[in-house]
Image (tube, rainbow, N blue to C red; front, side):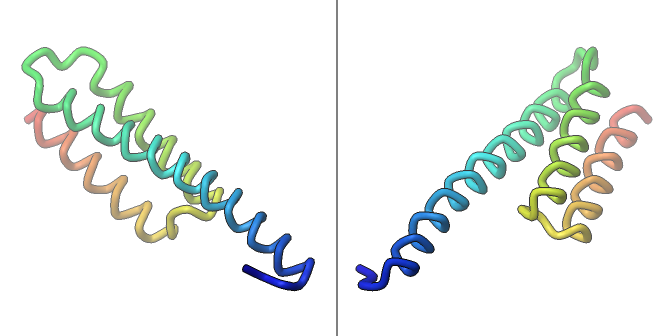
Amino acid sequence: MPNIKSAEKRVEVIRKRTLRNVRIKSALRTTIRRFNEAVGVANQDGTEDKLRAAIKAIDKAVTKGILHKNAAARKKSRLTKKFNGRAG
């Protein structure tokens, strides 16, 4: 346990930020999983909407500092390739 008041505050701030980051990261993984499930289904209605939602969530994670921009670009590229590959 920290003895200094500023250190106590830092612990609390870090705890709040960690919870926020976990929440955003979990939502990101959920949208990506929903897209992957939609690609696997024979009925492709709504797959493009799920791709857009996943890309939006990835971009939002970058602006919040959860993902690095290159990691986000890689994820978006892979999702788009998967979406275009199933159409062909």
